[in-house]
Length: 488
Image (cartoon, rainbow, N blue to C red; front, side):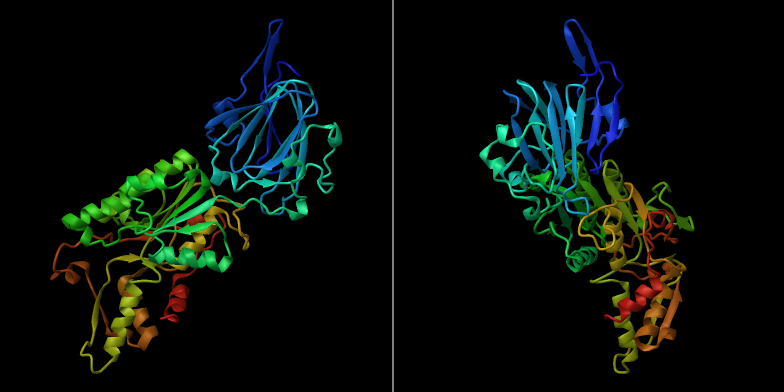
């Protein structure tokens, strides 16, 4: 054992598997070390993995050998007495599957093992004490996700210091399958809320089209994420991501007494509960925001603009954004003028164009607001952006390269346009009757409204620089509109 060395970290050939050299201070009485020190080690690259349990394995005799087990949690492994030869095998899906790393550990060295990397060791001395921190509690459901590979598999090429036929092994470890028969450990589950809404449907279509596994879809009737009492139904340690597609979007109704309560419950309380459970269990939270968190006085909005919502809907969305931003692993995707599978502006304009084109209908023109400017966001583009941020690349069925956490704007690319401009284009594409769309001001349009009207931002154009810098190129909104109209 080496004394008085500096704390340092060494990367291995397996992504996320990190070896730590630990400072050990000794004298005639014995020695002392900081076995795990959160602040110092996270500064060196250790994930802030949030251990919840400390386990100790006493190995009575030299040659005791255990593994190879891939478990559904992260582990920080060290030695309190004696020494081990350790072998780690990447059993996660991907091109690194089957990759091996070996090294020796004594009290002056430790290793961080990410979820899905198979762990094994051989005691090199009598009375070896092996200790490890884990960030999830054992459960029967967790155990069902374990993955194993045989210690003696020749394809792994592990050069055990003590031949395995001279070692103490459990019968279970002797019977583990060879690598060629091992199914990679599945990623943690992904929960999608609000799955019946426009974005929720697009996310489900993306998952099904790309054959992604481990996704669970819920709407308010299956999981009301704004109800604190429903969170106890889930073992959150099994989940790695929540994609929150749920929201209250009735902008004008939110100005009524009952609508105000519903908007704050869905848009603020619900996201705050999701953020809390995600922070506690190290889950990534994807949340969808809105241009309504701004007052629209700026021509273009970037992600750093302070909130200035005008109405109840925008205020409730801003509150939800603030709650989600407190979750360490979060993506806030800010959108504008959402168009997807469901009730939306384009469908309404298509129906009105059809009525105007029908000589027996009696409708001869339609008025549309011309002083609110922005760009539409199609849910197919939003779904692609969500999975891009999460790290899905080139059709891979698992995340490999996530974007930095934070807030990202997303709308269609292209020239900003008014609602009138979109309506006129829809009319032309549907029936060639765009001249029947008449521009009016917001004040004129709502002059005779029945019931409360929420104030709208005049400018909703979003700056797309940040998401484009991650390598994601939003679709041109006019191309998306043409494609969408062809489906109606």
